[in-house]
Amino acid sequence: MAELTAVQTQYILHWGEMGTRWGINRTVAQIHALLYLSPRALPAEEIAETLSVARSNVSTSIRELETWGIVRAVHVLGDRREHYESMKDVWEMFRLVIEQRKRREIDPTREVLRRCLADLPPKEPGVACTRERLEAMAGFFEAVIELYDQMKGLPTGTVRKLLRMGTKVKRAKAG
Amino acid sequence: MAELTAVQTQYILHWGEMGTRWGINRTVAQIHALLYLSPRALPAEEIAETLSVARSNVSTSIRELETWGIVRAVHVLGDRREHYESMKDVWEMFRLVIEQRKRREIDPTREVLRRCLADLPPKEPGVACTRERLEAMAGFFEAVIELYDQMKGLPTGTVRKLLRMGTKVKRAKAG
DNA sequence: CTTTATATTCAGTCAGTACTGAAATATATT
DNA sequence: AATATATTTCAGTACTGACTGAATATAAAG
Image (cartoon, rainbow over all chains, first blue to last red; front, side, top):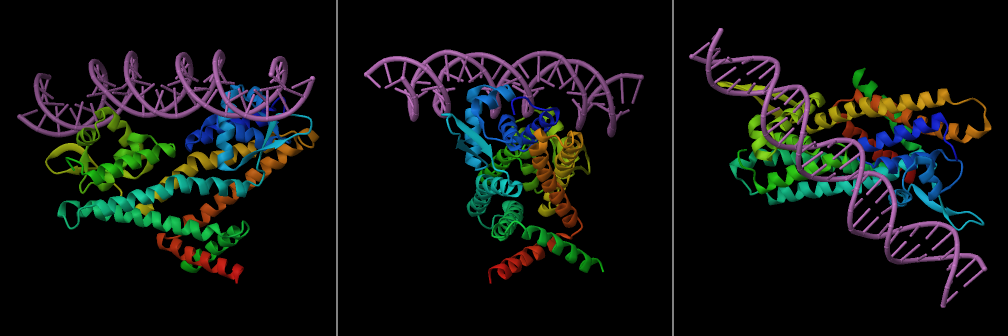
């Protein structure tokens, strides 16, 4: 992966762009894309050169990817440097990312909603509307979290099974 | 909604924060939160004052929310100004947002992946690995889009039904 | 223990997005 | 038509988060 092919470049650039749209640092996403395509683990130095970013930037970004659990350091015989490789199982990769984003963003939002409802002065007519709306929003988040917890336990393949059941439910409604 | 209560402020600030984490402009998210809690439609001027942002900023942000389809202008008798109100159905609101993000981000990613695979020189040993990875990623996106298409047709309540079916599948596996 | 290679930290800089306010446009009222 | 009110556009500014590179830390080799 010394020089990138046109296709590799296109994928890496697009992945970086997607990252920014979903609140993930462009360089972090690009590094992930590079490692995902790479047939071998790459040392930080090579990543920096390939993507034309500072070595220190790679260092920080790699750590970020490690906290997501989708990149890890491996060692190569006769080389003191850390080499980094991406997880290859796409489904598992997204499962990890979703799990973390739930923990970092969805769960705290549920907490804020609960706190808001708890802090709301009771029975005041002025806030009746606010309470109603907060309850609806809280209900939504509770449902989403419940759905997630249900899914969590399922083996990867079962998701497709659910997908087919969705089709049946639809047909039953329609017919 | 002339003056915000502590709870309303907390909700609006948190919602703004969540927005930024998911690639949505903070002000846009805050305005949405304000309108969502508001018992009545608000004119742009009042939104600007309440959130302490420029009137023009509200104008741009409102337009953004309108393109998402979750805020619309309504008219109040005896007032020439536009008043803005948020959709109240939370499920429908998220459905709309997801629909648009799929259209803006997921679908284009599928296209890029297809294009990458099409552009990949065939049978070259050097790119065998890249092809394999791109195919795995493309397969994932195809599956997600298929899942989405299945869900799309379902009435809101049916999602909960699916949720319960998830539980059964899980138990069947376990027991 | 010293030298060399590698990785991380962090203060300062840079870039891109968000925001403002003035000007332009649009719409209503007299 | 003239005036008043409301909204949008846009050039310039401000701000946040990303990035760099020098300094520091860590660890292997001699």
